[in-house]
Length: 205
Image (cartoon, rainbow, N blue to C red; front, side, top):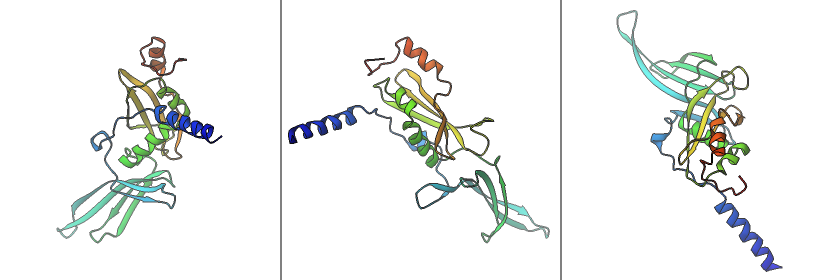
């Protein structure tokens, strides 16, 4: 009985090890820039992030200069972007909230998008079509009038492998960590499959 149990465990382990795809190592140069600052909740989810920050000097009424610093970012609870203005003493003197103040995602969000993408059932099915090393890319925002209305922080996520430029292409919605369009514009992928251009590890394909 013990031998049977051990055999089952070993089979399960070998399946988990060899059944998974390998992914190209991600480098900072392949990813968007890191956020300037991030506020997380107790569970580790992002509440708010600052994407960009800068300072400026303006002429004052008395002929001198006043200094201001600016922060542009996004709040996940409000589903809105913001622009905050601070004086030279770091006091908040003005803020503007708007869904249109969105901006590109930061590196930390890109890594979250990759995890959501890789765990989607339809994407996994695409991954199973190849034994090549898979390369992931993201960073391009997406918006429509349906599931990805402005403020939902939707992004394109792509996977390529070997000679297959688009192994998988999905739209990931970062505001709720969903994949509203798991097979976005992937007809070329299926056409290549029909032509036998994949190096497939799935004997039944």
